[in-house]
Length: 455
Image (tube, rainbow, N blue to C red):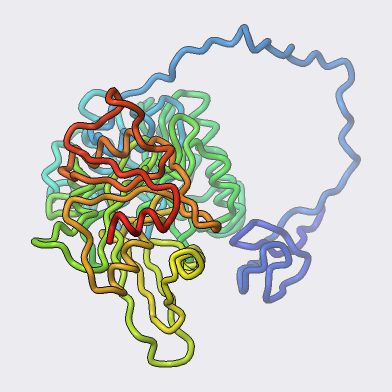
């Protein structure tokens, strides 16, 4: 009988090493190699089958283009992130910090889905009594919701095959294990095998599977990155410390747009949908204040109004600080250099702090002009005119570059009561037919023109 061999697997990337070492040679993570046993390969090599008739490839024109079967989850914001609803046979992985609301969201969605179809909620971390108490505390009508406290994936799949649910929720994938492996739950091999088994079940039966995943201290889903490649959709919960608002962001979606977001507010009755997210990303000061500018960003298919606040103060030492929250810090340093070169604004002896209000994280460049305006407003202690919104990407040559979906962004600004917009020339509506009621549009081709219009 062949003896088992010892090897070490990285919990972060899944790479294998013959001996333990402090740093993973593949991804560079520290103290992530764990010992595992695998049977030694022995016996004669397997022969490749000869004369096997494989399946003929199907032509692209012969493949039907019917839309995926979807059904609503009962939460419009969740449906938006999923691309329009729950897709039959899809596998969704939801990650987030502990206590952020992953289990609450899925329990609310399960209660709503169970009204029209069978749902099984598998809990590997809590007892059935704890899940029942949470459902009652949230006031959910989920008396007929199927609950299962189990961690062995073979038993879970056997139960699912017997009861044939339309939706299967697994909370969480890190607590699941396969009886065919010797490693502990949460190990790389267990995560890979249990996820693969659940994905095969979803594709074979058409059952939609939701998986809850733990995250590391860096904010990534724990386990090898292969988990995110195996599933169809990856959702992340985002929230600032102390804030009651939660943002669910799709970073991967085979059935919809990536980077789509859904906004929720945590209340005593669970997660409540925020119908107008722009309201929580704006301060709405009683009167204009210095260091504040409003821009329109786009998350997925939805334009959102955001506010960038800047504080410029004299540096107390020779090395001024550049700190950004919700905004790329390296891009902030670049914008300050552009301001100095093309607008004559000197900040080399000033501390500059930039914050995006409401915990929003801006990854696109449409907020460049608003960030520059907020910094200059704080430096001069001069507020921007009320009702002003800004759009535009700032280039290194001082030009203001256009942003995509400019008309939709301007219409969103007009809908929220803004009366003046500073935009790139290429985003300005052409002719009377493109005018937007109630919004005066000021086109600008260079940074100097925009600052002159503002101040």
